[in-house]
Image 1 (tube, rainbow over the protein chains, first blue to last red):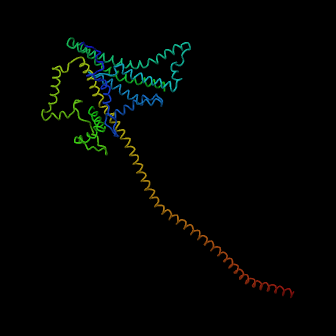
Image 2: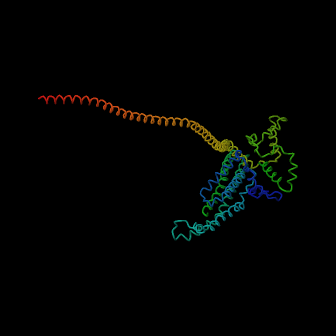
Image 3: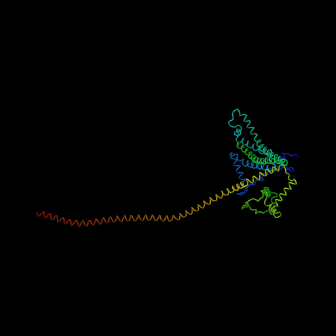
Length: 227
Length: 231
């Protein structure tokens, strides 16, 4: 069985049991449930503080109609960021590298924003297809372009997250393999490669957090347009 | 963390229908804590002690009687060497990746750990301080209310003396007024009586004077007449 770098992205099953369910429920196990106490331990205090700050920041540009989405956005953010960060540990499977999962998040949520916009304020929602101040001859072309741009959004959301994480994981694997193979042969080059690996790991930590945030931020922007 | 999941799901299982009743009775022998929720049982001040970040202190205490201080370390080293030598764990490219992310995690925790803990403690402190401030303000305002009430009571007592003084003042004024009027009346009456006396004096003196004058006048007249008659 040849070494296949894409094996890490196969949905894991064991004795026919899909383990992705376990992988998807792991983030929720790691966060403590809020207790009935007035003063909590540090973990619970920090969790509460983080969720409050994040929700406040995210909902700042949204009007009151958009505030219904607060729980969805915050829980989505926590879920994605935990999945991404847990995937950086060795021998782990990252569910967000699966395009199916990310499209499963992106398409329904984007479609929900579009339908809300069409239902509540159809004129304004359609008006977004034409930016202000366009010269008259460009109008037909621009409407087509904007419609394409509208329909490409869910694709972009899903593929952005998938591609970033898959690429990151793949790079880590490749450079780690390079360092591993070079270690007995050319130790100096191996040390260089290990340095690159270390920097890449730092980058991947940042990317993991940023990609989750960007996903949720873009969804909130789409909602802002339509609500 | 996973033990907490077990506990939560175990309690959910206990309260579910089928196994619930039997499990509750059977597991009572395993209960160790007092099991009452009011007053809320106090949380421990600090979390469980760990060595090197992940290994609980209890393991070291467990092995201490038999193997002393170096026991767990020997166990760890032996385990690691066994896993490596028997190729139960194979060193591959993931090991490098694991080392990399391990360094990042350990560095992150060592550098930012105390600050994050301080932030969590500060959040809790602020909560307590806010409540304490409310309590202090309430107590201060109540104490001030008590002091002001006492002052009002003292003032109320003093008001009696004030009334007495005022009453005395009024009585004095009335007395003075009365005496003035009596004085006035006396003077007037005296004036009138003096007038009458003077009148009487005058009348008496005048009468006497007038008779004497009459006599002299008559004498003069008589003299004048005699002179006139003789002439």
